[in-house]
Image 1 (cartoon, protein in one colour):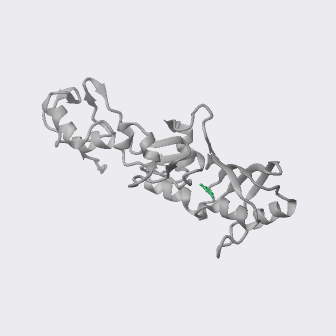
Image 2 (cartoon, rainbow, N blue to C red):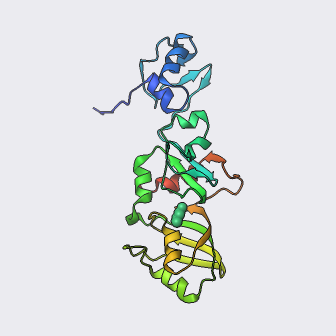
Image 3 (cartoon, protein in one colour):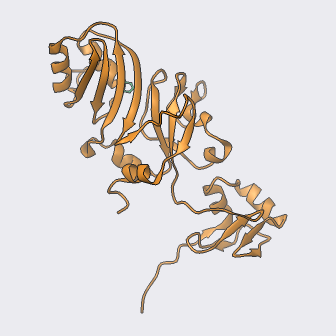
Length: 243
Ligand code: URA
């Protein structure tokens, strides 16, 4: 005999997890006869469905099942990397209504004035793996600094500097000029790059993340724009986690 675990979920939870309707809206849609399960109209949203095998439609449009969502955002200045904040605008404010219902959070933090690539997901395991220093996930930043960097400065930064009781791990620096270039980190301490530059008596004047774990910031996204990750990008993000 083959034992199979059948995965069931309430219809209203499914619709809310897919960002299609809040629980209340789900019940209302069902009462209004707008929802079908395998072609049969259902009048209640508290029934159980199998998201892997059942076909759910709202107004005749199929709601595709995806366990997790992965979004790339080109963060503008002035937004904090948080899910909510009493005073500041958060990166979630840049998403659509549907996406805001998915329980997404930013995978790692960029400072309020740092620009560029933020991955938002509701896949906690993969986010945790990407952020864990033991997995050495590369994050590449474009930077500009106030004063020219000497060869000795670059060597110190690459070998590791003391940023106030913590000695940074080795990193890579590729200079475009003596005050600009790219820095690749495998860790992400609070204000890390700014504090690293301060450790060599310099100051960051521009910072933009352009890559995270091999996923490049899509140059067609303007600041504040976002899109879902492609299948290949999802694979890079999920890495060994779900295999
Ligand atoms: N390092 C910083 O100093 N700030 C960021 O936002 C990211 C890395």
